[in-house]
Length: 466
Image (cartoon, rainbow, N blue to C red):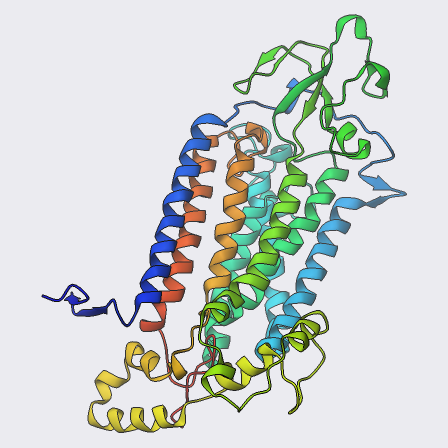
């Protein structure tokens, strides 16, 4: 048997022809192994068990950082601003993909209220103690999102469930894959989350485990939470401005010794970790990678249309860079950007010869050639490589939960995704992240041979037979 080509379970593998594909799969597998190792090592070494509750005072309020000003609450303002910016960029993605904005409006009207109720449900469930909901509310009170107590996981999964049902039916009507809508909408949630975390900062919440005692409580030399003698306080986070660092300090109400080596006595002033800041910056970085790198990385390693079809296009790198910063600039016959050439040559182009050959094959064996695998093969225009529909959506779940896992390790037990059950909370977040990573790989390599339909829009429109 030739090792370069063999068959397994009726699937043909040709290593010489698909060398780049198998190299990329190998890299994905390596990433998968690295992620699992990181999860395992950090869970074993960086997990800090602690409860904020009655063990610590309200954080210091320094430099005018308050939860509201003149009756205007900052947290809902930050959440609303995050939603607006996420929706605006989603509108841009809809325009870029040629999707109907009316469909987005329907989605917003249905998914956001359900998302808010989901966030409220998980945020209030067992919030005051195991088996005790926030303020003792009953089952229906868990859905009262206009009251304090929200959990982002409940919001995301509630909105996702509603979106899956809605856009499944919308997609059947518009002949657009549900994965296309997911790619246009879901990653932008990261923007809302990144902005919303600053609302948590003004609320003096979403802080990690104590990292250092910055002032001992002996004879109360450092003063009180309301009136701190800053000359007696050691600065721990020297890289942070005071208006952030000083608002992360609390007074210890009990004695404690944590697994990260921090030992505090009653009355000590303790510095907490700014995980709201870490999460905000990490999610913003994740959004930039998912939005601008992941969709383009396949173009960088693929054949270039202006090299395959020599003389047909007038590609200019300088114009491509200029258009990246000013996307409203249009290409002309004299000068064209890489983005516009890819649209002309691949994303909005159909190989008529391949279509004719496919129609002939379809007449000979309709049952075989209506299968997604054959449809996918017939649409491989010049063997260009592109990021497939669904990768960006699943990348969101991987990146968000990847970040959340490491931050959850230092969150107090009374502020977890699943209150007072850190092993379950970490396990669910870990599973969500792994599902996201598997989904990215599946969307790129397996789903195109499983779910493609003629006449539907995926990463590009697969030719119609009408």
